[in-house]
Amino acid sequence: MLDTTTFITRLKTILNHHELSSASFADLIDVQRSSISHLLNGRNKPSLEFIMKINDTFKEVDLQWLLYGEGEYPKKNLDKKSNECSNIKVVTRPIQKKEVERIVIFYTDGTFKNYEEQ
Image (cartoon, rainbow, N blue to C red; front, side, top):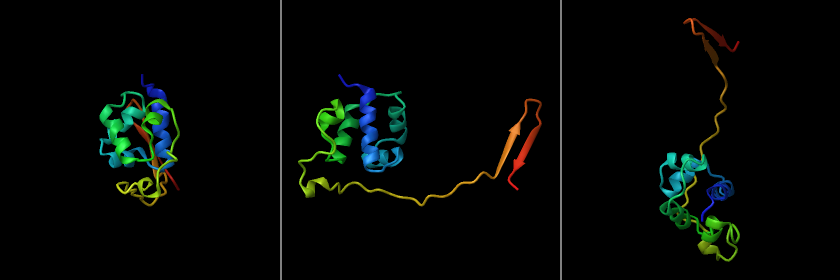
């Protein structure tokens, strides 16, 4: 039987290995972003279709490792050509530094206090 908790750990290993956000991972395997979020938060269990999409997209993922933690990741016995995931497109966006512009506190009596950075 599939242990969802350890499956999620292995899924996070794949994300970290490829330096992917959950959103970009969802785009790569062609599933809704919310389904990744629900899975990572333990609300849903992975479907067979979801598992097969991972297996089809990431050739270095051993299905036994993904499902049961048996074997190794990434697979060592791939030749160079099959190890290249030609269907993986990583889209990077420039990191924008965010700064707090203001904080507004609303009170139950309808008043508020506005704090702005000087």
